[in-house]
Picture 1 (cartoon, chains in turn blue, red, yellow, cyan):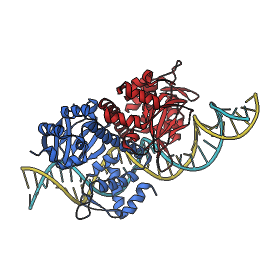
Picture 2: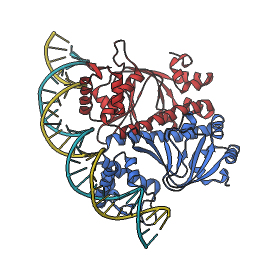
Picture 3: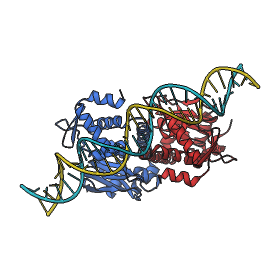
Length: 228
Length: 228
DNA sequence: GGGAAAAACTGACAATTGTCATGTTTTGGA
DNA sequence: TCCAAAACATGACAATTGTCAGTTTTTCCC
């Protein structure tokens, strides 16, 4: 099994603020899990006994609303640490984490995390910075949700996917989401998302081959997102 | 001027994890400000040189969307610390903070905060807990915004105001917001908020005297909020 | 206390978005 | 490879919400 000390992923998350011994402890207690698309990492309401460090693949963090719809709050990729928030506040998970494609994650028992938080201020501050950043992003999502139209938000979603997950060799978005997932990111009905995506195709803003989507007119999409 | 060591407000926020010397330093460098209703504590994009600890009154944290509407992301009251996030990530403020009524706040220069974060893990973890809690709340707001109707959100807003700010001696909500502010909390047009409030009055869910509002039928309001 | 400005309210209408029903295409496993 | 299930797509319609254009009420300042 790999050693955390050598794990490149670590450069992207708060574990980089750990010292040698702390990392060794994490390395000794962690376990690696392989997940297939659609598998659940943890569910809303679960008591988490540790955090999950994403080594590969993408996870959607979502919450079921009372009316039965799923709202995707965030997409987490390589380097993200899932479940941190719940471990810190010692509450049950507020969101579900589900694999969007095949994934590899490391499970790190919480004791190693909590003890380090309490003894190593560098680590605590590093985690703090990450959570503070997440909070800013969440605030921005709130504003977008309430002030932008569905069409604007769909356009933004494609731009977001391109910026955060990139494109494959053929220019298609590297992360392929179902129409339903897109609707759940944007916070709308699946049919509405489909209709808008069709419209974008007609306007030449995007092109699609099966469920793979490519941005065809970046500037145009941007204009739609900005509402002009 | 008051000493932080004796400040009761401190019990409600992360400053309670500071030790004697750290508190003394805060006490020596802080300044107290009195603000009138409507005054700006800081604006979106401002570079913050410290944090603001709310001793009295209520502040709205909001963000202007490109279309000119203000979205209120959070209401902060006694004990809240404003600007923490920006100081931690060393970014400009993401939100504006405006006094909703007359306020008294303490300005604490950031050095005292940052130095303590870096040296006292208890303080860092305490701040972490608070921000983690804010993040959970923000995630919940995202879900509400996208999955609930305006009517449900208005009902929730009144329940929220009652739970967090209480009632005065006559049973009216202690915090009075303008219809516009309510609309900006809920993320809707002012006219829509007004119409729904009128409807709630007709249904006997609330009663109003001028802009003061009282909850008349808690259970009924709850049912509306839950969508039943 | 009077008067102007701000806030609250109302109506009519249009635009956006959701729902339901149904047909078509794609996908993944036997 | 073929078939069933899932995903995608579209139409018709209803419900929700926003916009604009006013009127009325309240607030607060001189």
